Length: 85
Image (cartoon, rainbow, N blue to C red; front, side, top):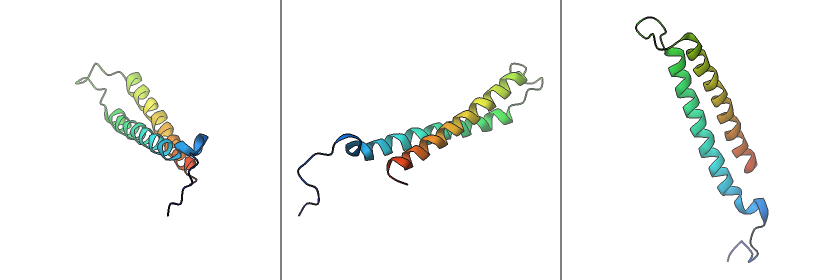
């Protein structure tokens, strides 16, 4: 015996699982890239062996990475909200 009726889901309810999966995957990807580039940004050496990296470039990369981490966390949280967490 089926628990679903023959009526198709309407609106957001029909895409809840797909929306959760999409938001979760994109959020985790942005979060992982943000953390990865944050680690690269704080470990870059701006001393003479690497003259092509200015301190401004280092802080810009670090700042953008922090923003990426925050966006990733917000997307993962939004995925949880989609399914009622």
